[in-house]
Image (tube, rainbow, N blue to C red; front, side, top):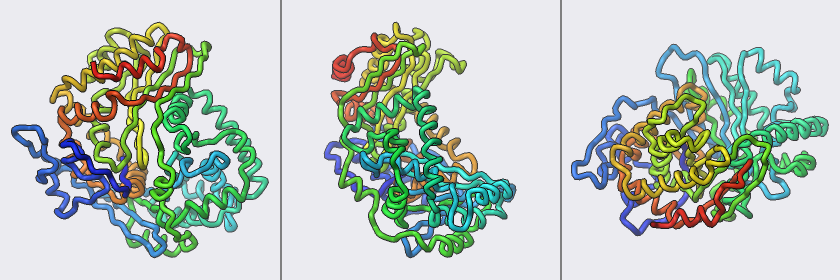
Length: 496
């Protein structure tokens, strides 16, 4: 989950988007405990609107401070004294989307180089300091965000903040370290190329967002990895690692004032200029294109394919019903012991008729757009019937999804969201990402009220708006000679 301060277009038709405000708009004119009584969150089409009781979800309120350089500091203290650990990290509104064709891969390369020594700490000293604390220092790069975070005992969190500040402001990027890391990343690329699911989703982004950096891979092409320079790394930091695009998020055994004081003292060299990611996206918005990428590889035992439609951006109010629709369509895997009598109609049909090895619905959000679809693996002889089953289910949902199905999907979604924030690392990440994407942290009371506002009529509207008669992106790999062609898929999304 997460939210972004972007202007949402007005929806003229009377739809779910009319009944519920943009997710980046704060509704805190009342205490969040009263949000479920707000009429905007009642089921619009129900003759007997129901107010749901989510009072047990009164989690500790995060504390937020903004420093003079625009850097935001967020803490969420654990509600129990039994927690003796903390997670502290820096979430940055920067990823592969903000690269050019010539610099694609720089954000990920930078993530590797950040740990290779600073003017204060050699690589060895950095590693020994982390190990001596019994801490874990991690990082990841995505298309729109980069994160660096540490898991530590509560007494060591000041040292962890000092390390994060040091590596983000004082990294050396020696030529010898850059040369070594090229080989590491090229080997990582080879490993990724062996993970078919990763390749499929990279190809799907290319098919969906051609001629836009959002369609590029995160690692970048091998020719870029071989030529990325120290100057490229410093240029990326100075352009994108700026105060207004960075959030320090801490969770667990921490005190807000202590964290703010440390961050204020240690993060003084962060640039302050206001080149926000929203402005960069506005300058180069992603346009969804209907196209496909197919790679025939008869050496693979099963075919892999994904079909996707243009989804919603993080702050688009339609992102919530799309989340419910994803939960409704569900997932299924033959090897995980899941029965054929799942709550998902699609999973039931696939399991009963033995149409696939696995299916997985997905809903990926970005600042201004998204991808909604199904990823599947199947034997070659099943590809046509499986494709038909998927699109039959879409049309069934549009015409006759029941309220009981939607209630079940809502409950499964809410359960998954709660399980997603189990532990200090998950809480710190959730708060950091939400602040970057929504401009605020959305209380679970509000989020669940928004989910409960989705009913069967809402789901039918969403299918019509996002899937029926819409362009489609396809990525396929393996023995795919029996997968229907693009025009067949496009015709199956028409109203029949």
